[in-house]
Image 1 (cartoon, one colour):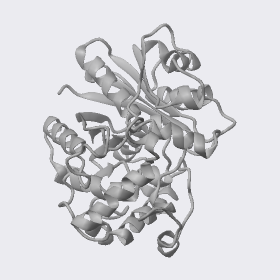
Image 2 (cartoon, rainbow, N blue to C red; image 1 turned 135 degrees about the vertical axis):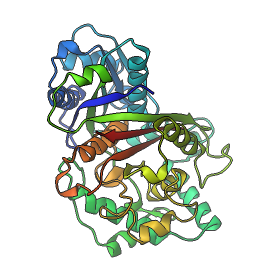
Image 3 (cartoon, one colour; image 1 turned 90 degrees about the horizontal axis):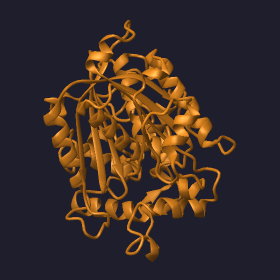
Image 4 (cartoon, rainbow, N blue to C red; image 1 turned 30 degrees about the vertical axis):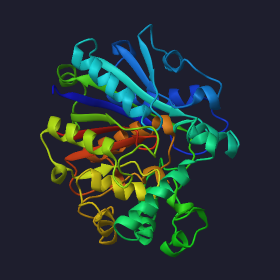
Length: 388
């Protein structure tokens, strides 16, 4: 694959921003990415934006022109992508394909979601639209119930990893403490995490990700254009990407303790990048629930199936471990602004590969991976990045 460079990044603080509009969130994160790249807005050829459900939650469709206007861009083409929690990564993929085709040289890619201004029941209904409405959501099925079923099945096939799930949450919150953009910068003891109230057995409060407002943007450039842009810091290239899907419903999946979309997307990304799981120094994985983090690390080939919990218990996935996972705090602590989540993962990997992560900076950060799921593991986008 031809190299595509990430030449600019920007994001808002993730959290509860009921007073802020979609325009505000887009304007802040988008302008940060453009300023970080050091380019003129007139150089941007196209804008791609990921958004899950602003039509339902904010009454706002047609997000591409909204973002373009908010950022003061001229009459460039705009595209909005939707793939549930993978909406942002799909925007990134579409922008990459546009650059690889030769249609564009520089593309601005963003993601945004505004959710916290709505009542809990409304947000739950909105999120449930990412599963099968007729066969699941209308029957009372929710995502906590769905992933609780996966956890129980995992316990049956392998062993009970409830404590290790708690450790996933503990590590996430420890990392989030060091991230100024994280929504929940609070320290919790493992005992408090493990004793929290049940949401859907065996998932308790700390096993579930957050409801979040926020935006994240990245600026992509073809290799030749990136050569002429600002120097003086480490360049980050996208060297491989995979995109795969699976059934929308849980019942139709062949297996619920491993996600075929993740395995297929990982195989594509590794092959394209010319690397393997052992070559990845750090990863941001989609921890919508703590059991998902464990399953994801197994599907990515970091650990054997059934052994992901052991890796957490042994400290391998902690910030100073051999394979740091979710140094940003992940969806669990940094937050889960659905349309922006995939790009916020990219933001963290780029920050680490540049060596700009401050207190949470890991010692060796040369090759990183972002893993973004949508729905009940029905959509998966995996991106491999490398610093040079």
